[in-house]
Image 1 (cartoon, one colour):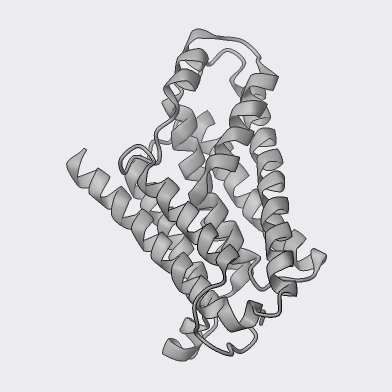
Image 2 (image 1 turned 180 degrees about the vertical axis):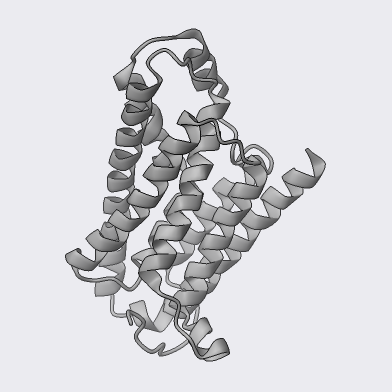
Length: 240
């Protein structure tokens, strides 16, 4: 669909390798397999306030998305072979619809999910998208999953991941709904900022002439990062 044939499997270019190393390193250094944790300073601030604080929650939402390497990896995989603005808009909108829905409902109704397990599923979403970009499902099973449905479904899981993080803040019920909406606006703003940066980098890479030549290696690196995330979260689940 969006996957041109690969023309080689040589080393990933400097930009792609650097991005992969940054992502993997940030994951490994992130709270010792506790990617679902929240910054203590932010947590303390939120626990001390009550009422409507729109700007604070917009900031927290944007900060979470911009520093959320698991979400950014999945988004990078989603847009890897998307060139038209219309296609990018459709897939990003489906992802946003999914994670906004479960984030808001999860917090409002107090749906409690194990943060380690939900983050492991998010790691699997990265693995899935890398395999999809590699055309693995067509080669292995002779079928192509519906990419739009998959993006929406994984967006739902990513939203539950966001919900567990917000519940870690122990947000006051006073002003909960407007604060949640502000947090979601921040998440979307952070997503747009991060997506813009990814698209700029991808644009330079695509114009370099070696994009298709190195795409295989880049997606293998992405898949490896996804497995690292899964391993971190499962380790955290069993030792917590």
